[in-house]
Length: 251
Image 1 (tube, one colour):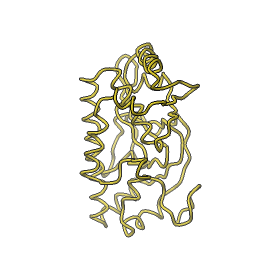
Image 2: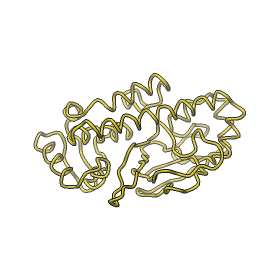
Image 3: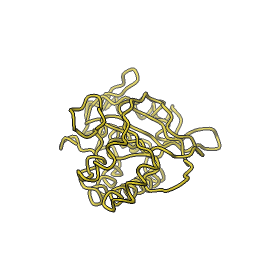
């Protein structure tokens, strides 16, 4: 069994999707998991890259999907944390990456060759079903993000992204997001983001620190957010109960 840093012997990685697997299914992939630490901004895939590895963020690690636009800007579409995985989840054979996939919050990962996952899925219908269900949840997250960008204000979306990041970092009130990163998440210029942040600061909802945001009033932040996070969480609960991070329940 793989020895993983900061985990007791025999304990699974701090990834909710892997912890959702039955003992028998996890035993099939455990010998093939490789532990790795990543830094912020580390590139996992560029558009067109052959997707050969599945990456499972663990603990507070967070990954973002970025879509390049003709004006040279990257727009982030979804965040993936310990509730899931990125790369080759349900596909078989050659699969080119469509988006840029990058580490947003540094931390531990475990990795699995897509060929190994495909071989295990062929042996275990239950494991294959779990990954298909997760793919459905990820698709729902993408649909919700598209709708959110179309109808909700910058203020609502700013609050949503900060809450989403908080949920994936154990509810920690210090979120390692910069103005520049928030602007990328929102797909707007930094000046727009700065104005919203200044409004939230004036209302006592948050403070800014070097390279991070300190949330002073989580309830106030939720009140300013749209309900897109809740819609995604509700779908996760219907399809893969217990996988979406819930700091209050310790997952």
